[in-house]
Image (tube, rainbow, N blue to C red; front, side, top):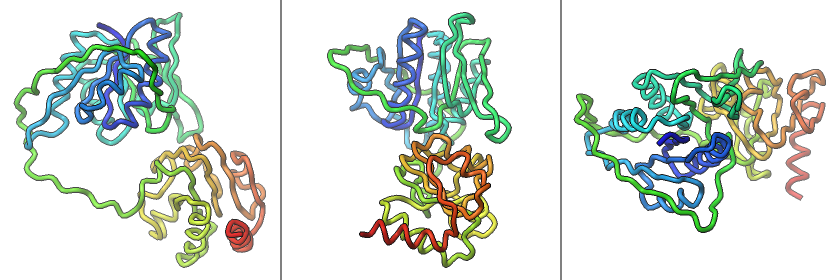
Length: 315
């Protein structure tokens, strides 16, 4: 069977992975297969967007977790011998990828930010950030299948094409597991998911006190965006929830506009915004590292600049 296989949790991730999977499959000269479990009604949608085959995972019993799919997927891979398997770099996706890779005794590139196919070595070349985001590491896998997890919004979603046809195959029920789900509780989010935000206003250490976050929120509201922060604001001062922290150990975002207010721009933070389409910053230090990454910058006291920005936006 071979091919590029993708396993995702939702439609948006599936379309993103389909996009890069189709590009790689064209370079390799192979096909694309997608596993799905929750979006059964979207089978044709995924075929229209590039999948040559959709493998439908069976519904789970109430006491089963999504981990029950791991042995099914691993057995399919042993039989089908894919060239490459892609999963989303979410908490669940990374755990599943690691466990599938262990069952297949193969290599895994975690949080891969770019993929190409090397014709010479006949293998995918995967890129990921290293040394706190200061370097890019290139990884090749000498075993089959190569595996990688892809952070959400790394690639644009695939778009439908006309007159596409594909195969649909139902997979067998998962084997009994010694692990049983006794109870499920929804985790209450205390903040919005900033990875989905198109506009982000980020508060940095230049903010002097908690009360001053009010005009950061006003600026975000005027722009139609969301508030985020750097690590010190969340972990040291506890002014905002950790879910709003951007950086190497926080959220990786890809907004249309990122506006840093009082953000110095250390490499760990810049790693989290490197995929922003436009980066703008306000900082009184003209030598702040954020300006080296910014498309637009204002050197000035944020307590003077931000109220003026809000006033202009409200006109």
